[in-house]
Length: 193
Image (cartoon, rainbow, N blue to C red):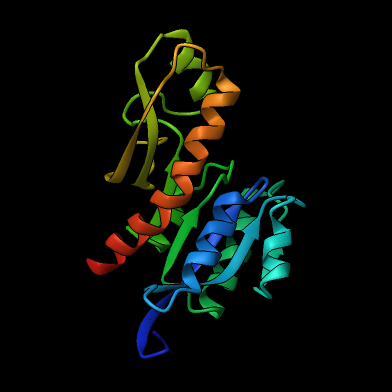
């Protein structure tokens, strides 16, 4: 545990593959005195634009080449242990992890997904929601398990789908809710550690 400002903060690592807007919201939230977590490591599977937030906030980061998955995961685990990471948070991380990696962090990996799971697992969720004329969509924070987007749900936020919505407009609106939901869900999860 890390002792900061009179609160025990647990160390989290955020895994990204893209722009990193959820990473940014987690970092900013973690700076709050009441936050129970600290972003201590950022890992990416490529030179992702979101790494700029790790640089901006002076957080250790690493780009891991996933062309050899098991070698990549072994390296990631070494970094996670070195930094004493207690919880992993996927934020737009576009890789499927091995069962071996899952077992190493058993029950301590969260993901945020842009739909109301169990509906619309995987990719192109907003397109599917619009195509199926759903009245609501949203976002879900869940535990990562061996099946795609199927772990225990920690929190969800329901978002109205408007008649004139496109996949782009819906994605943009849901992303704003993701930024609020993810820190809350992590805090809730940590409270039950």
